[in-house]
Image (cartoon, rainbow, N blue to C red; front, top):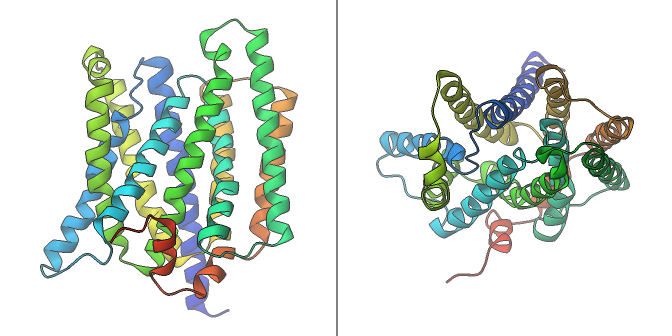
Length: 327
């Protein structure tokens, strides 16, 4: 391996671990806001991130005044809708369940992405991929069972509705997977800055509108303190950096390395839950954790399937097949 290739691999590894830390940071900030400051603004929290993403498109137009969009605007609008609602459901889940459950249940994105990639990107998966996903699904089932038992043992609002929080997280992961598949295609075949900027524009419009109608009263009722402002800003900044670095990594790296970064974020999330929020883990929960980690390791050992699937299509084919046919 030459020096250039070695430096590239180290760069991809660094990007992956950065994403892992950003994901954990947003989870910690959300859990702090929910538990210690009573801030439960599942949509409002994401408005700032989308606003910052618009800066990519502004920079693109500033440096290239003649630049024209490579992709129809309505495709970005649909992707943004999936992204906004996926983020909304995931953040809302923290109101009912724990940081450890949310971060591990996020792995449900993996089988959904597989389904979408097979049907829309012609991805070719191996038995190794499917074995990894089956292990993850077994782990998810154990986590949800653990939350059910915890709800029966402890009479507390958060614990009683833990299963509902788990379901919200699974729904968010399902919707968010649509955005992930589209992002992987766009950043590899189109302009990365255009994708992030257009996602920012439509994401900002959709999330701001939703926040105004559904969270205006809750926002005005909050007594903001230095701590809550810091955690709120930390969430926005962490999410913005995660989106930015993910787009670079998907362009330079591959799905296997990206999955490994998600694996470490699960580990960091569990550590944060135990050390920062003093959450206790049952044996069933620990078993579920190891099943999920094992599944991700197995899945990541196989070659990235989407890259092979994309080779057989024209640049626009995969995108067109993901979205409705609008003349």
